[in-house]
Image 1 (cartoon, one colour):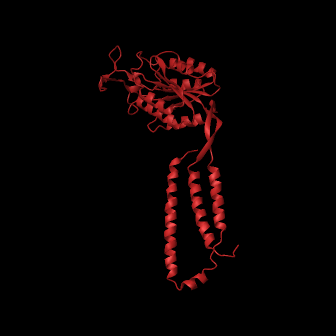
Image 2: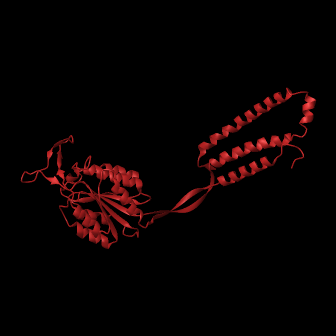
Length: 334
């Protein structure tokens, strides 16, 4: 026999304490009765008391308490095989880690805000599988589809500019990489969520979005930054800002949020576009959209579980309590 909450068995220590209290209380009562008058008179007055019934009632109450404690500890014996199904949707988060995501027009910067939103998304998922694609001028799968959200968070922390040596922003290639990361043999709903400022410098994102839509893959986009934009900071090895990125003409490069491109991508992917805000309300809207999707079985597996037997002890406790309450205090009383 095993117990689901074996620590509750320590409560059985209450039984000897209850017995000691009952013995002490009985002696105090006898002393008090003896002070009331002559023993023979007291004996005549108490002839109708069902002392045996009271004796059994106390013991039945102690047994009831013991059975209740054992039931709460969830006794288990024997095994049963159950089929456990994991239902949800497949989500590929596509995160832009290009240099433009370090712009601070969304505090503390675009990339940090995007990572916070993905982390928040992980805490709100309900059995869904999620993977992460990182991209700038190229793209790769940082971690494949998983329901291990804790491990996913640890990989997310490592997402920084510089992981991809090729500069630029190739949203189209990132969409293709995300599509390849799905399990084509599953009939589950597949979703791509792109976290970027929308500045696309490579490939054709609309062509990639259309091809994904042909495979019934939904695409949502979240834009980080402001239409006015700000300069792209440059850092030294101590991660201190030492200046701002300049083009070949020596002009400071200003990175702006390209909402039009992101709206077109979402439209082609039959999804929606959201603009990132300081309070993150766009994530609430995204979760509402995901909750509307039909969740299919992601995985079925056989699981051997111990059989719960607390019901037996709970029933016995109820029987003991009923029997105890049915015992009368007076002789000749039914």
